Length: 112
Length: 114
Image (cartoon, rainbow over the protein chains, first blue to last red):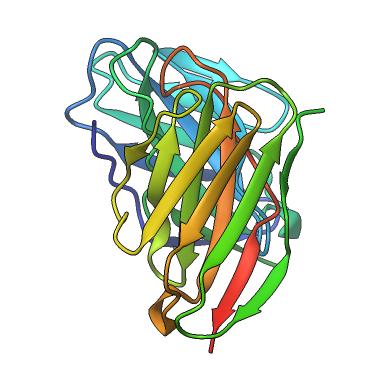
């Protein structure tokens, strides 16, 4: 399983763009990069997934460089409601493993 | 909407009791997972299952067992509860086809062992 490393915490003011970077140096060819968001007292929820280059949805953008050894989750113009823990995961698309391992995540605090 | 339902939101048990945490999903997902979450430690995987009657140890299986007799139900069992098992327990399910498929979580069970 590819190990991921991300900052423990980040602070941001409302209205700013936030970028959270995750390192996954031993990512394998079949691996996808997925980000989850967890609010207090709730389970995590999927927000975005990508394999390479850039993916964008209504919530966030995900940037993945050509070597895929890192990825950056970008949250545009954050609000107080974006205060949450963000987890970066790497998982494969085949029968290699079904294990879904979360780390400690990045605790994002949005300040008024 | 995918729904993962955990049987209890809050639970208080005594040391030494046998505790069952139940999880049911309604989307015919192959994979199911049990995690515990403690402050500063993130989500840690206890056990997971990729098919009926199949189970695999996660990162912290000691003191726990699981049962998956039906596809939709995955039970976590604490054979003899101890105070260090006081935690938030989260169940999740995901479709088959690898570990990258989207996982859906239940609302969590906050277990206190006294």
